[in-house]
Structure formats: C-alpha cells, structure tokens
Image (cartoon, rainbow, N blue to C red):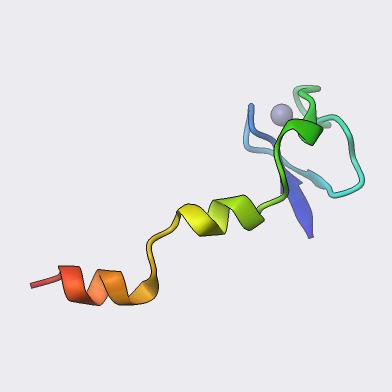
Length: 50
Ligand SMILES: [Zn+2]
C-alpha cells in the first residue's frame, strides 16, 4: 500500500509523513482510498455510452 503525494503525485510509503520527492506533508490527505471514490461506478461507463 502506498500514499500518493498530493503535490507531485509521487508514491510514498504509507508510514512516510512527508513526500520523499518534494517534501510535501502527506498527512493532509488520506491514502489512495479517497482517489477511488472520485471515480464513477463501473456501470455508469456502460450506461453513459450510447
Ligand atoms: Zn511530493
């Protein structure tokens, strides 16, 4: 499991508190789970396609 940096999108260890690439604070955002919620449901892609 990894935490995605909200600043530079680099993947960091879940245990990391700051981004290894840019040094941004990773505690501001939750790990990847939040990203999944923003995606539309799988059925929506089928229904929306005509
Ligand atoms: Zn970063």
